[in-house]
Image 1 (cartoon, rainbow, N blue to C red):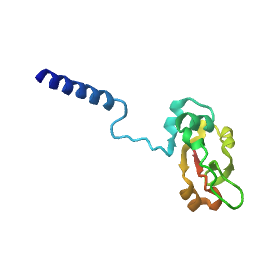
Image 2 (cartoon, helix red, strand yellow; image 1 turned 45 degrees about the vertical axis):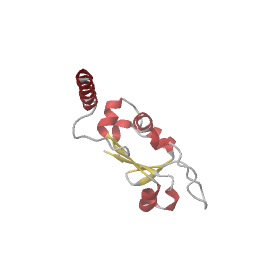
Image 3 (cartoon, rainbow, N blue to C red; image 1 turned 180 degrees about the vertical axis):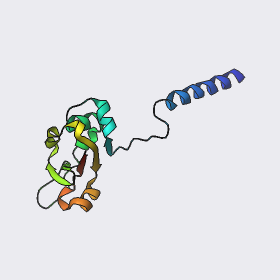
Length: 127
């Protein structure tokens, strides 16, 4: 009985140590932000490739977001506060020029940029 308890304790201790080493202490990755360092570490050439590799959920459809006017199923790209285009326009942005890529979900995008952006916005800040 005592041996079983010791084995269980050792198993839990080993698992705790193994999982603790997988991330940098005190650093949490924001699921809605891709940083300049992450992009550099990914060794990609365009912003589209960086987002596709690092945060593929930015590129997924959110479903129909409006009953009036043009449907925005996908996020729209903004660069330095100006509308840049649809998701394909990310292929025209050189990866190493990106300081940060931030996904703004529908409600936040609508509050910041207007009603037509209910599908979200990928907000690119360049250096």
